[in-house]
Amino acid sequence: MIRKTSQTFIWISFVLMVVSTIALYFYVSNLLRDEVEEELFSTEARIETALKSNRSPYELPPVVEIMTVTELGIEKLKDTIIYDPSQDEMEEFRELTTFETINGKNYRITVRTLIVESDTILMAVVLSYLIIILLVFTFLFYFSKARNERIWQPFFTNLEQMKEFSMTSTEPLRLIDSEILEFHELKREIEALTTKVKSDYLNLKQFTENVSHELQTPLAIIQAKIENIINGDNLNDFQYEHLTSIQKDIQRLTQMNKRLTLLTKIENKQFVNIQKVSLAEIMNGTIQNFHEISAAEIKWDLKNEIWAKMDPYLAEVLCTNLVSNAIKHNTNEGDIEVTARDKVLSISNFGTKSIANPENLYTRFYRESEAEKSTGLGLAIVKRICDLYGFLIGYEFTEGRHVFSVRVN
Image (cartoon, rainbow, N blue to C red; front, side):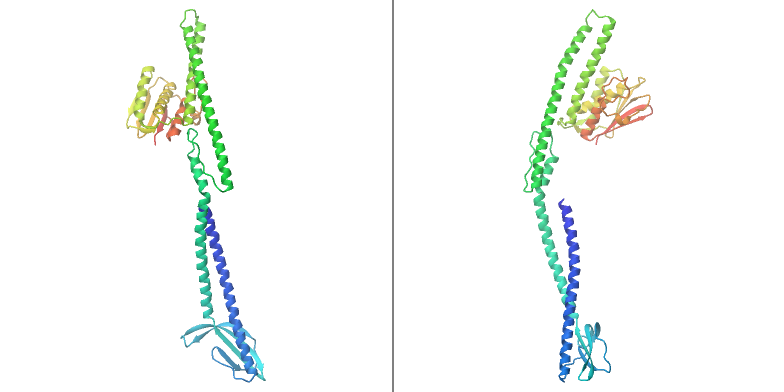
């Protein structure tokens, strides 16, 4: 803002300075010319008076020339150039030529005056004016710039405070006041807005945590009761099938509750335990865990170590969700390939065809088909983790395989 204001000030001042200099030049030039012509007419009048009084007028060619002529001519006023022997150079003169009949004789009276001094005076005046204008302009520029910086300082200070504002921070927003009414009102409204936003965020966070916590207990109780019923002896096949289906739905609901809570915490940037972690090492541990609970064949190829600055827990979630997604959507009982190379962690599994809408892969609750039983939150969590730490996630279908890759910057 200050730079924009300074540029505007410079351009306006420059235009005004040029216009005023040109106007001053022509004004002083005309003023000096009028003074020269006034002197010429005055000298010519004194010569006429001397001739009428039969006195011998003063004559000094080429400044003053008096000649008798047979016919009267027209009065002329012009510039001319005459050689000046005293300076041995051509000089510019202003010349007045008049014709008068005095005491029965016709005279041509020529009066000239040197105008070189007039030009010198003109240039001196213009140069002095320019120097004064430049000095005034320089003073006003730096004075205006310093004053603008002082006036705008509260705004820029508060702007930096706003950039560092975080809803998760316990530190209050410290804004400075200003004598400018608009900045004072802006400060007041920002403080009110941030206070309201932080209050709403804390209320929403508390509500989410409470709901998640309160859901876990009844879900665990229901799960335990259903397991007790299933383990009983008085169930027929129909009842057993329905209770098993209910048990799976409860497990899915429990998992969804945990993932939604995790997703909310990630979006609210509540994971602040930043460490330098090895994604390759975490992925290796994740694969070992899945070997114990899954029959899927996972091939692990470590080409290069991959280091990232992030929360260790989120690193585990990232690796777990990628492997889980690959196992869940693997077809033909093919193998799953996981590779770490050149800061890129990639994982691939077999598939019959490419995903129809890859742009929706990371949308919450998105499933390629209704037949799938996943929560639709695994890849959404992966995407939020990548966005949080500036990682690049990509998908492609090549040679009959779905390939997901995460590039660490």
